[in-house]
Amino acid sequence: MSDVVLELQDIHKSYNHGKPNEINVLSGASVQVKSGEVVALVAPSGSGKSTLLHIAGLLDTADSGSVTIGGHSPKRSADWERTMVRRGEVGFIYQFHHLLPEFTAQENIVLPQLANGISRKDADAHATDLLTRVGLAERASHRPAELSGGEQQRVAFCRALANKPALLLADEPTGNLDPATSDQVFAALMELVRDRGLAAMIATHNLDLAARMDRVLHLRDGQLVDE
Ligand SMILES: Nc1ncnc2c1ncn2[C@@H]1O[C@H](COP(=O)(O)OP(=O)(O)OP(=O)(O)O)[C@@H](O)[C@H]1O
Ligand SMILES: [Mg+2]
Image (tube, rainbow, N blue to C red; front, top):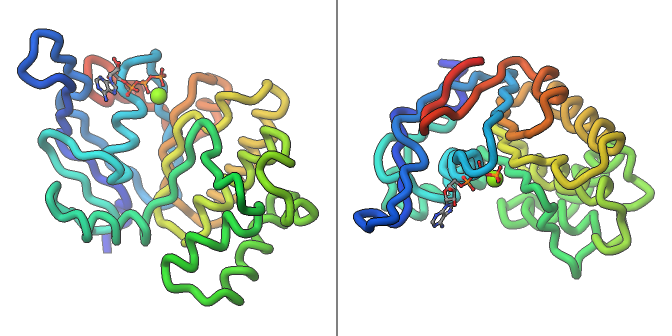
C-alpha cells in the first residue's frame, strides 16, 4: 500500500469563468503528502490557500485535475462518494473555530462521530480522551462562548480529529490568536498530529510555525512549489 495520503494532480480553478473579471486562482497545482508528513502552505493573502484546501478537503470542486485521498478519487459529480470520503478520511480546521454555539465542547466532538455511526459511549470516551490530550478535560461542558479563543481552537482540533481522519487540513488555524497563544495551540495540534501519524497540510502566515513543519510549500502563479 502506498503511504501517499493526499495527492493533488494538475488542479485548475478559476472564478467568474468566461467573464472579463475571470480570476485564475489555481493553474496546475500538484502535490503528494504522505502519512506522517506535515506540510506548511505559505503564500500571500489572496493567492489561493483557502481555495486549495477546500478542494483538497472535497469541500469545493476543481475545474479540472484530480484529488486522491487515501486511495479514493471521487469524481466531481459523485456527491455521495465525496461526502463519504470527506467524513471518513478528512479533518478540517478553519481559521475561526466554526463550533456549534448551542452545544458543549464535548458535544461538538461527539456529534460528528455519531453522524459517522459510532456509538454514543465510544464517541464520548474518544471526546474525553481528545479533550484531555489538549488540556481541556475540565472545560468539556462549556459552550464555545464560555471558552477563550485558544480554547475554542483546541476544541476545533479535537473535533477535526474525532473521526480519526488520515488527512488533516487546516486553514490558518492559529491566525486569529495572539502570538503566545498561537504558539501553545500550535504545539498542541502538532502533538496530536504526530501521535496519530497523520498527513497534514496547514496554511499559515507565520513563518516560525511553518519552519516547525516538515516541508514548506508556496503557491506561486497558481502552482505549488517547494521552498
Ligand atoms: N467564491 C469566489 N468568487 C470569486 N472569487 C473568489 C471566490 N473565492 C475566492 N475568490 C478569489 O480567489 C482568490 C484566492 O482566494 P483565497 O481565499 O483562496 O486566498 P487565500 O490565499 O486563502 O487568502 P487569505 O490569506 O487572505 O485567506 C482571491 O483573489 C479571491 O478574491
Ligand atoms: Mg484564506
